[in-house]
Amino acid sequence: MFSSFRVAWVVSLIGASIAAAACGDDDSGTDASTGGSAPLGGADTGGAKASGGTGGTTGGAAPTGGKAASSGGATPTGGAAPSGGAPPAGGAADTGGAADAGGAADTGGRADAGGSGGALEGGSGGTGDEEIGGTAGVPNEPEGTPILEQPLDGGYACEVEEPLFLPELPGNGALVAGEAPSLFWSDAQDQVIRGAKLDGATVGAPYTLHDSQGNTYTLAAARNGERITLLWEEAEGTTRWLYSAQANDAGEVVTEPHALPGATPNSAGAALVSFADGYAAVWVEGGAEESVTRFARLDTEGELVGSPKTLLEENVSRIDALVALEDGFALAYTGFENKQFSAFVAFDAEGTPYREPIVLGEPGVGLIRRGDYVVAAWSVGTGDPGSAWASNLRIGRFDDRGRPVGDVFELQAAVLHEQNWLPAWVAVGDDLGLVWSRGGVIYICGGCIPDDHLEFVVLDGDTLARKSELVTLENQETSGGLLRSRIVASSTGLTLATNVTYHVTAEAGLATLTCTP
Image 1 (cartoon, rainbow, N blue to C red):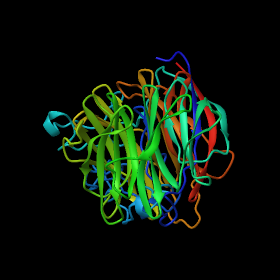
Image 2 (image 1 turned 45 degrees about the vertical axis):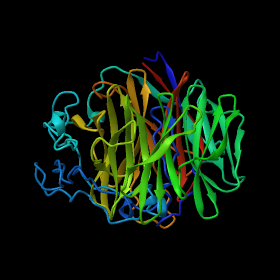
Image 3 (image 1 turned 135 degrees about the vertical axis):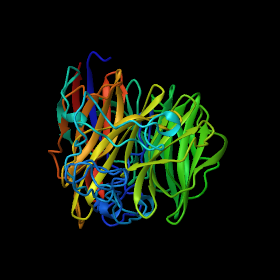
Image 4 (image 1 turned 90 degrees about the vertical axis):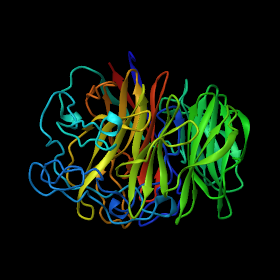
């Protein structure tokens, strides 16, 4: 466990690589929790999630404070629960669909009406899929007091060390862990890809990795040993191709940029993670009407091993998180079928899913590996997404075959007209750090600007009990909301990247946080 560590919050602009719908852009992004970093996503301002979000597919909290049934039916404590909080249909974000930020919102009263209990008493168990947990392979409904309302017994003292300020960094960033973290971004004005080492909240001298012939989008990056592999989309006219390159910590290009063999035209939204002596990549191929999700292994030099394989055939808007397991992978993504939703699936080292994906809730899921399990955080909303919405975060575990394990916990109570969403994890010694965005719901967007701030807490790595007070990072410099965070560990602490978002654009900012056990 760290004797002391410092957290740097790095706020990175993301360029608008996908056509905006309603009021925002929702480019592809993934979680960097296992050493792989993916794109931080598009500018997430726009439109209430009513135009593209999902409701609580697992039911969520009832507006009367009672716990909704998994189908969104009547609450056990009285009062009719909302109908799952399903929002109206919205387009897939990659193809000009609804933006994430502004979100739709949830109505809903407190989500802790499942009764009291001991520390971190969660859902009711159930034998579930192959006697692992959950009900019919679906995570349990949470019960008991939300984690943030339970008593704190020791842990970490965390506080903001340096408030948010604006370093004028461009976007399309990918954050990679290392002795000193590295940040990579696409400079849209000059059509180049650059990188730099970070020293806490200070960005070092940038270096150029690639001078593009066209616009570049949605960087993903991961480290394996001394090499960092990058994937990005590069436009040739109206067609996008998936490109790859490698750099080292000295800022030297060790594998020249080249189109990734086997990737077809209009490949987008790649996610990348280190695995064994190479990497694994997942990306989306296709357009607005139809898309497939592809999987491929890369060797230590970032070259394709074998041929890409179709992983999913449903429409996928973005890859939210990709983590490596002992003999396979876990993936969270935002899907689209009349409305957007988040889902989880585990698959083997050859790209074959172990079972059907599990729908979790609203778009945006954070994953992190913890031993033989994957810990997930996702958002569930309740209420009328057009006028009275609230969303809160749930936390649960899955085994390495993609089956729900044990109880599901609510992180906080749902508050009417507020949303808690876009979570990201990081290992803090033997424990887990979690950061997410919290802000007001935007029901109608006409030049709307989100007001989300960031909240951070440390949870026990085994029990998921709270191990720190809640830390809040406000944007005191501008009017933009802080969205789509990424966080990695280094020898000096933790580094976090997020977006300072204004409607459909964003810019960069920096801050630091300290946590002492």
